[in-house]
Image 1 (tube, rainbow, N blue to C red):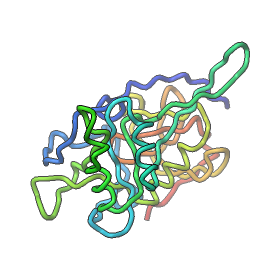
Image 2: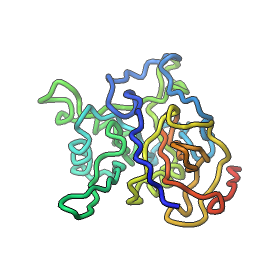
Image 3: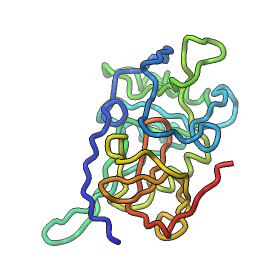
Length: 242
């Protein structure tokens, strides 16, 4: 079945269109929320490990509006691995079909580095100087508190397993892969499944109905959801997170 959806999701401005700098102060009302059940934080969701660990982790950085490509280039010039998911859109020009790309989540940059390396990036003079706004800043996890300072939240990090699943999905050049919010999902997220056939084979997420079609939704962290194109029921099976 062909996915003919031309969906323009009403994205939450706090997630997709940039927002004021987060200070990391603990504030229950400012927590990342979603009207859909969250994927377990201990089983492929948000990492709750101490970010001061010496090993590399995937840090979520919030990029100031309209500067995602500049931020990616800056991090890469410093020799660090980073990821910017792209959205692929099919257009016709002079009768010819072509694919154009644009950032899928223009407010987020994912950096794979140690806590010390990310701290160095954030304090680099080239990030903070020459312009009124910093190029990027931490995106804080408002669901937990720092052990050394209970009034503040730690930077948000993503477990490798969850990040690999997210990268696998968003690297597929399918124009019907879309960011979604709880407003786009017609029913609550359902069973945890793994896709067994087709171009989305191996993707793990929750079943949802969006724009009248059955899709698999990958939730990287609370409120950050990306949906596959249509996936038939026979092309997926239940996935046990344990």
